[in-house]
Image (cartoon, rainbow, N blue to C red; front, top):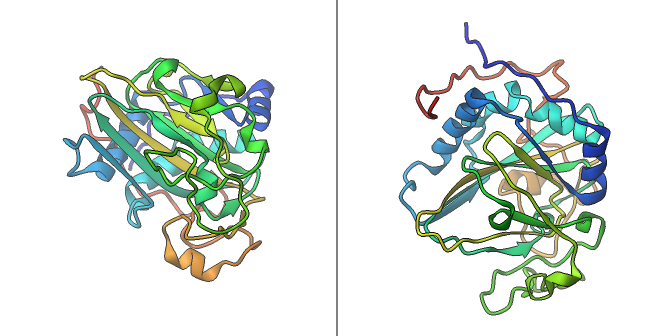
Length: 285
């Protein structure tokens, strides 16, 4: 018999639920213990295999990722936490995204994930985990409440113009240059320790702080979830998630449901988790 690490979903407070609804981001402390961090790290290591020595690597929507991540998704407390943050009972998993960076870390551009993803709704959440601690200055930054504002035309990641649009057509507004006018925006960031989780709405304007340290390292993973009110929403051009069959079968306004996306909660009727145990020795005692 496979025995999962002990799982206790920390109670979310009314203030935390209100922070997610109003601010669009909330930090929850000590969500994962050392065993569950090891389980998540094992899945992350699968995602970055062969790229461990790269200066930078990122990947998302691997079509085979559900196998290494399924045990964590089913048996850890994260789906329960997401349900409580939304005050909902239903939670589906969309996809994973991993980041690996070594050496001086250039800050990442301000962006909205939702503009590049064909989904709309209030019941959307990104759960972001890092395996290294960092202070607020070098962590993710968010424009508080921006998920309640307009959906912008993404970013083309043009080094000369941070507001260069992702889509050539359509009526989405051009991205503001947040970094050039920081005082005009209500920017929030957090000190972070491994085991914490940052939960934010994918419509949030956000970017990553950099560092000039030669020995800086960042190994992080985002897990993306959706709930009952999520609908398929076409964009002015190609958009994620990177599963062609989803876009072939769903139409604008359809409920965002597909066999690609496993339902994690409620538990009744859910297929059993794939048994996995964390590899020993991944983390020091």
